[in-house]
Length: 145
Image 1 (tube, rainbow, N blue to C red):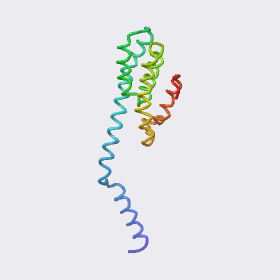
Image 2 (tube, one colour; image 1 turned 135 degrees about the horizontal axis):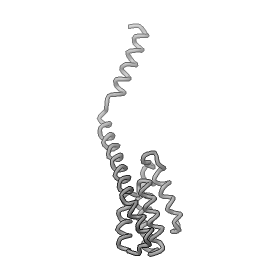
Image 3 (tube, rainbow, N blue to C red; image 1 turned 60 degrees about the vertical axis):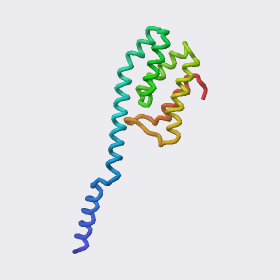
Image 4 (cartoon, rainbow, N blue to C red; image 1 turned 135 degrees about the vertical axis):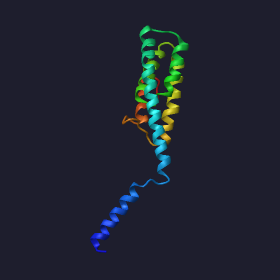
């Protein structure tokens, strides 16, 4: 073989090996697919809860059970930017009704999302800011921190 033929052969072999899935690729691809699905579910949930949160705030509802039930559900989608905005909006509103309960929700949020972000690399969803950056926005709610 000439040196030119040998170089082409090496390049071809590298391409073949680079595109062939490894044993690690399948689980990583499965995890990536789950993350994408979770992100999509959180986005859908945030869209579904948008009118509920708007209704609670616009009507001036004082129904603690309804507000807390909604916050419980929003907590599960607060990892998505839209879900976090709804969670923060309802927390701000609820703070005027029950500051202690609202502080608990913010504490749970920080414990779940900020503590996890401190241990794990900062994940982003759909090109959004890292969870730590989004969580830092809650500090402006007036709860200290």
